[in-house]
Amino acid sequence: MDMAKDDVKSVARPAPAEHAPTPVTPAPSRWTRRLLVAGLVLAALNLRPAISGLGPLLEEVQKSLGMSGAVAGLLTSVPSLCFALFGGLAPRLARRWGPASVVLAGMAAITLGLALRPFAGGTAFFLLASAIALAGIAVSNVLMPVVVKQWFPDRVGPMTGLYSMALSLGTAGAAAVTVPMTNALGGSWRAGLGAWAVVGLIAVVPWSAVVRAGRRADRATAAGGTAPEPSEQPPLRITRSVTAWSLGVFFGLQASAAYITMGWLPQIFRDAGVSASGAGMMLAVTMGMGIPLSFVLPRLAARMSHQGPLVIALGICGLSGYTGLWFAPAGGAWAWALLLGVSNCAFPLVLTMIGMRSRSSAGVVKLSAFAQSTGYLISIPGPLLVGALQQHSGGWHAPLLLMTGLMLAQMTVGVFAGRDRCVEDGG
Image (cartoon, rainbow, N blue to C red; front, side, top):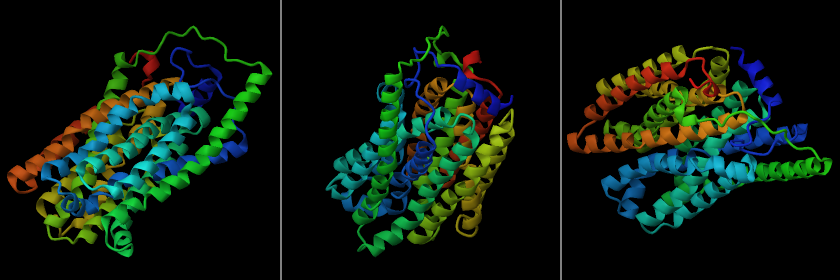
């Protein structure tokens, strides 16, 4: 299938009114498209620091707030829970307000949540502030593929690669910079984590301009008396699609692997004798691998009719990294960090697949919300089970066995999800 041609054709067909995420809008101006590109990059930079910046300081936060080991383990699963709960609201919010307005609100929520976390005097307030930030991340997660499909329908691969690269940069940057920045700001974890609110505030600027430009375009369209033509296409039953379910399970398993890595990899290295700053750097290396690969991989995936070979290749890298952590966690730390970083690029791969598995932006918003909400629900037990197994066994071999089993399942369902099918076909 020539996806670029299909994408272009999909623009000419109005989405079914029953499940269209937004009113049909005129093509954006060159200035608006530039704002959208800047907005996508800045939004993506904000989608992970709330999580990856916490990992290297988790021990300090735990001691300061008096968290139990179980609650600390819960912190590694709260992102997935929030993404599942709030991500499911994204289609409804997008239909009412438009994707750009919802992403703007998401950036504001991220900024507010990160700004409130330093004022936490106990676990409950810290979790609440984190949930506010994670709610903003959740709706933005779902709507990133929608923004790409709606405004860049002929460049799904490149634009997905661009914001995936920025997302990886934000993830890696937070992991690498948080500890040194905390030390530079006086050594308090509160200052180190709160500083990331500034990045969220910067992202609000271009999205505010995009929303204003969209409202002006809407007024001009209304004044011209144009309206989208009605469509007689049947509503898309996303829950009846085997493709949608396979993408949801694949998304969930790769998310589980990613959050286990972000939440526990620094502790695996620290227990092996690596310093806190060194463990943070290892996580930064892992996340940093996604910066170049997230730009290249979606382009490659968009040119392939079946993405199964990419799924297998990434899975093999993950299995190799787990093997290294079993036998020599400290001795080969750099190699294992690199391999796990390559494996984590299943995330930009599945985002690209979501954009390719529907012919319209209306289908993408439903598929994205379904796959991500379902996937994040599936991913919740993973980090919790890793923490429980580590505490029960006193080591990391049992958790690594679990991680290996999850990776094998991810490879299997990912090959199935990589088939050349669209959800509109019922497959």
